[in-house]
Length: 138
Image 1: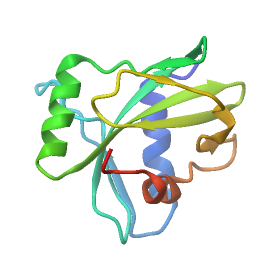
Image 2: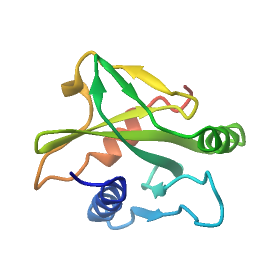
Image 3: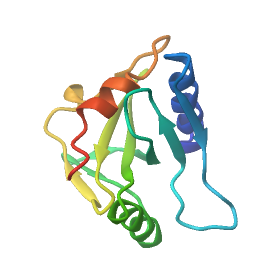
């Protein structure tokens, strides 16, 4: 079963695979607790910080898994005008789905996992569409 770090690497690789001017990097810092995992910059969009978590659907719900410190840090970035969110990777067989939630979210009800952005083996995450279609004002 792939780790959270594995999913972060895949997201960075998929961003860099896209438009040659797209950029992503791992930003978490071992001496600075709570800082989000990734910085992503896609042409035509503002940069965004993303905290990546692994999740599972249990009884129709997904626990987001962020710590209080992470939520406070992300909320502070959001309040300062940065675009921030949490991407929860849900593995379903060979496919993976991403649930995108605001930083203060701790648990989400999932009605249809198939409606979430999907990555199948051999294909990249639809990062540009994910960033374009997310409601950053949540």
